[in-house]
Image (tube, rainbow, N blue to C red; front, side, top):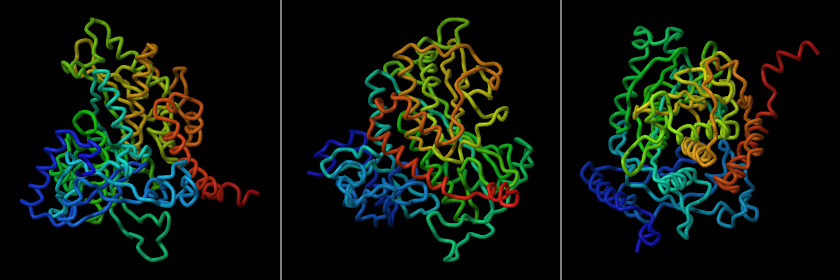
Amino acid sequence: MSFVARHRLWSEEQNEAAVRLRRIVEEKGLDTIRLSFPDQHGILRGKTLVASEALRILENGCSITTTMLAKDTSHRTVFPVFTAGGGFGMKEMQGAADVLMIPDPTTFRVLPWAPTTGWVLCDVHFADGRPVPFATRGLYKSVLNKLSARGYDFVAGLEVEFHVFKVNDPKMQPGDAGQPGEPPEVSLLSHGYQYLTEQRYDQMEPVLELIRRDVVALGLPLRSIEVEFGPSQCEFTFAPTVGLDPADTMVLFRSAVKQICHRHGYHATFMCRPRIPNVVSSGWHLHQSLVSKSDGRNAFMSDADGEFLSDFGKGYLGGLLDHARAATVFTTPTINGYKRYRSYSLAPDRAIWGRDNRGVMIRVLGGPKDPATRFENRVGEPAANPYLYMASQILSGLDGVDRSIDPGPSADTPYETKASLLPKSLREAVFALNDDPFFRNAMGAELVDYYVHIKNAEIERFQAEVTEWEQREYFEMF
């Protein structure tokens, strides 16, 4: 009996998808298959197997070291993995031991830019079949299961801003390597500052078309392509999908864009605010709603004239606002991302909502009897781990429903309305998470402590650096 069958890891849909996967591999004569899992940062890691070996282990998994889950954003291992419990307090995580990547065959695709290569997302399990508690796709699945038990599905659409530059110098000399290595030297594809003009779009069209073509061929639900306000900045939007799909779409999209661009001499970055003159911040706006599993009805939609939200929707909105400060570690997980929270900048700086207002954190769209009623959370950065971002939204919203939290009135002057300010730094966000016991209870203290440990490691490295600002500010004066 296979590992998957013994531990009942696949649904009927996944078993059927596995049959299709095997057929596609044979029909297309694929040479290799990439097995990837989203790590704690929402970055794909894994192994590439020859096709015959990938099919052989499809239902028994592929081993990978637990140290993949112990790394910060510099890819340094920040847990003492060779001590008792490996720094995780679990014997299964010590000694750089192995865990198993179990493919999810419903995610299988053939790479358009590498047409003899397949690509499948995996979940991570211990040898006894238990999901590894630090694997964020598994955490998100557990949150979706709890939501399903209450009779709802999570629906999300994505608006993702990012930058694409031309690579001038890839910085591939041996001295440029490191953890992290030297970033490439780049130049602009457009001067920006002409929002949505066709001229700026046409300047970037060659690379945008490369991305569009392969993203569509990959089967991602692309909806629109836009040039954004800043130089070399663009936005791709994706149609609303259900459950795991929007989070999977985000990790696949980011990885695809970076690979496509790299192969053609470009550098794509989902870093919020690159340190390049005149470049502006990028955000990730998450459109979300809940729908009834029984009849597909939008749970946020009001039937009453003059009421823009149902009572359920008001409670969910109240929960998002109530836990906004603590959730920023998940929606904005990098030190750089907090440079976007500026007043009067089309980005939020406090936990408020408004009707069709782009200065608030939560923009409420739709209205009475409108089945497209939804919340657009504008707080996120494009580098966020989508599984943690979306899990934090569902958990916060449902807590608001359970406690009937009143979201208060719509904020028509978003940068003047009195409300809880969003954290100004990652360190403040970590403090906010520790001060709010909600996520420790909802996600588990084990996961929260693990994630905070990684974020603190990044903060400590940053604090140890002497920045150019400090040198310029103090070196001559004092």
